[in-house]
Length: 508
Image 1 (tube, one colour):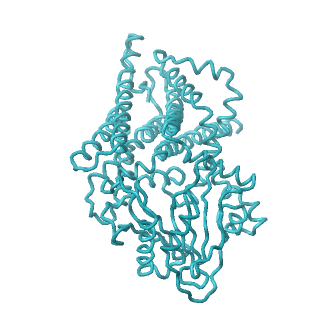
Image 2 (image 1 turned 90 degrees about the vertical axis):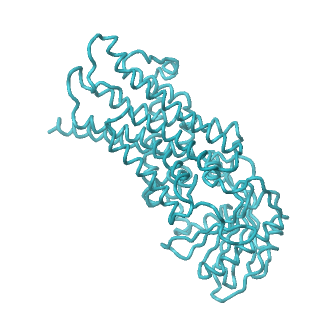
Image 3 (image 1 turned 90 degrees about the horizontal axis):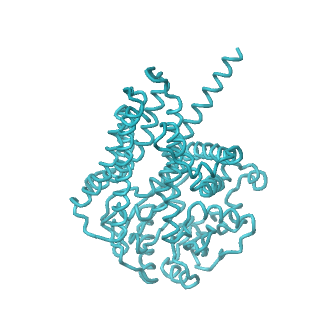
């Protein structure tokens, strides 16, 4: 009985670790890509001009056109959101929320005419960003799964530092010509220690960004679950106003935009209008966060009917709130300049490699002795490892490729792009026995994405496009190196031992 229980616990421990690793690999890869979320979105909408600036008069006129569209098409909505045009995204983006449980509305408009913008429908970098912490699941489920895996990783990092006495000595040791197990172990140690401060920071701050959801008991006790009042009293948003229950006429929005721009030096990011047809309508101008670690947006609230200034929120956060916003700022790295953002990106790649080598090490360490066959469980793990490590990059490359190949006028085009992402991932998972060829397919998809862009006749040749293409070609080159390494390993082992190496002894 005791032996059976221990075996069951060992089985549960091993498989839970694998599942956490598969989730963390997806989180690291998509989170690393999210450091260039605006550039990815810009690349996936090549029709947009990026050399235009917008002055106060142009922003005011665009806001008026946006409000006119919302009044005509979303008059019953309780909240309107207007993301104003900017140089890297010269369109007017509108959202509206009608009520709990209902999907929000969304449209892109030409800021000059107010007509629907002639751009391809795509979720751009936002898809990878939200997949990073929601896994494309319902938000509550996805965030809890990612949070649980992040907590396990944080515990593993701290316990690993405490128990690994040779952590820094092993960092300078890489024995790629030894056994497959030793090579993957050294690779795991190097990628883990190389960016260890980043791994600790990104894991802890990732948990901190959603701490109100993970540990809500203090907020529920102090505020009876009224999250809006908590965020207002902590200085993160302006105080919400309940509707008066009487009809009201919204004041012209353009003059309020000009006044808001005159009151703050930061660029105006968006406008939120709450209860737009009520006598107590509120218009909130939200500005981009100032340069610095803290993730906080200055805000100015106006009475939507009279135009009077109700509240100004700009700095002055208390220590606890300032600590929280700094954690969020560290995780999202909006403060980072070009060089620091490259460093964050490389550290994210190191984290992805750390998780991937840990998964491979798990399966390599359990390979049967020479001549023995693998069990079903080991074959399943090896297949799922390939499906994760090769499948996710293939899915991302296919997502970019679909952006160029799908017709611009295709109905539900953005959903088709996401569908291509998951279809490619599923195909890789089903064909996991063709392991080395799959890595080559990922590289081919990256190169194919570049060719499709060129053949598609993308007019603008801008630095961000060239940088994106260069990064994808670099990824393809790294994957081709991995293909060669994996293909050569069995022959190297055979040359050292002088005996044939069964397929079961391959590194992956």
